[in-house]
Image 1: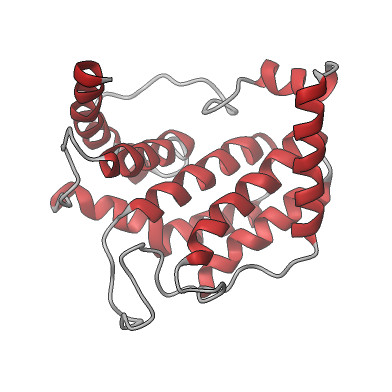
Image 2: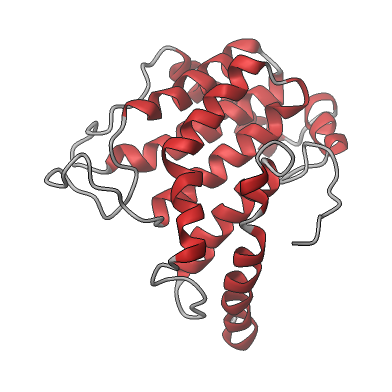
Length: 222
């Protein structure tokens, strides 16, 4: 595989100059309102315990909440650089190590030892985890980094790598939004952890081929 030349973090969503701009420049009233809401929600999350796998009014609700919790805490830290938000984000991420299933195809009757293939939830969580790591990477501590590595090894990268030898049904499909979400999340992981985890970089050819089919469809029908 050809080695990519990629810029330093942050590189996935915002460049460093754009991040600094959100911290220093006066925001529009609309953006100021959004920033206050992010901080308010993040303050609540700082006081909460990490989500349990079975939390919520039905099994699987926590999987969607987890993505928004990680993204909220990460964005609050980007906006303010307050350590409590970053500490809480790492704590909530570490909570995933207590889960048995991360797949949207799992339910309360799924055996705990059954491995579930990479699905929409894997893709959504991978995007949140990649953005989180990309934001923290410049000054990440070994302890923080280990939390990311443990979670990836337990679920997300582990299942993504299995797609290379045994592509799931959504791979290379031009008609499925699962391809966009799953391949997109895998690609975000690959770029976020490109230097630290060589296996992650190996996902890129798969992602390029699979997403290529998805975008061809968008070109045809919008």
